[in-house]
Image 1 (cartoon, rainbow, N blue to C red):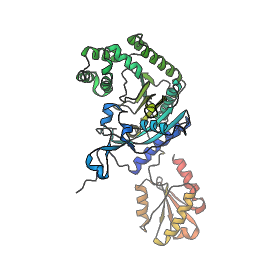
Image 2 (cartoon, helix red, strand yellow):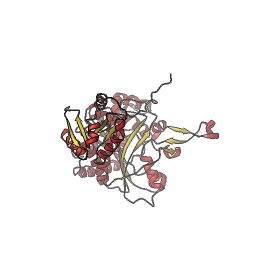
Image 3 (cartoon, rainbow, N blue to C red):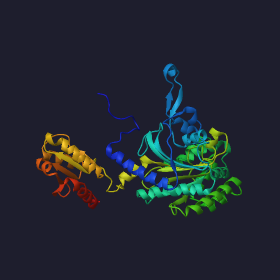
Length: 441
């Protein structure tokens, strides 16, 4: 028999899953819009040349390529690809619509992306990213505001133990130089360093050796990271390297502004933070929570990416929250509010026989006009069976419409939580149910 499982790394979303996802997305949208970010959407499919070369060698391997179609199918060549992230499409959009977009463009984007990665806990091949980006300014206020918005989202969702880890790509470059790693090996060294959380210092040391990095240089770098240095110690390590000292000054400026945001007290300098994507140019950041390997989001400044499409310098900075990882942690920790509606309706209308179905439809419309979510039971089953169904679906109230109720213009409302039932005029039944729902919380 044919398997009904979705493809590896992909998932079906049942109603309860969708409601939880929409709750989180609703919080994210609300916060981002309060910070002045505007919505943007881009196609699921991009031209392959748009994506290739933007994520480094490791990223290129994870792009889902789409083979040419029709008469070109036999060539085995790809001309399109599924969207890998939301940042490169943003850069393309800014380049394409520069005459229609404001000079200072702040956007958020919540859409799925695809990566040919190995599935794991909180890691999928199709997943949603929740991006927030600011284009057009080099001011450290941009980073501080992005970090503040992300911190406010997580706080509103109920996270208290998150940490925003920060570093700077220019400072990281200076650190590699100070450790004695040649410039032509920086890119491959960063690929190894980016795995420090996953494989540990010994694993990174071994991988660096396999990538041609001298043992002494790798050991010096890893010992520096192990000391958990702050910016003062970083300044001493890189000495008078101009790029490194400028990066430290930039981070200090951002941190001063962060103290005026929701991210105050949540930011920690982490000199080992690398961020594997090759397009970052300045401050970089990741958010981690306890008990979850890896991060629940990351980002940074990428001042050269838009210029790859436009041929001119346009500064930009952004952050991406991983929706799936947030949902995994919130589900495991039971963080969703009790008031989150996981049932399909507030009330179910039950007719006693087929002759009452038309009246049931009319009453359902009346209740819906008052703002209630209403499920009409479609079959003329015994009332006990109908009530049992409503209870199994978590519908808290049943509006019973028998012969007497149709004659008198009333509804018998049964509260399945308390088992109490009362008779109301049809015109006031909705108000009674709404009040009962409010008391339930």
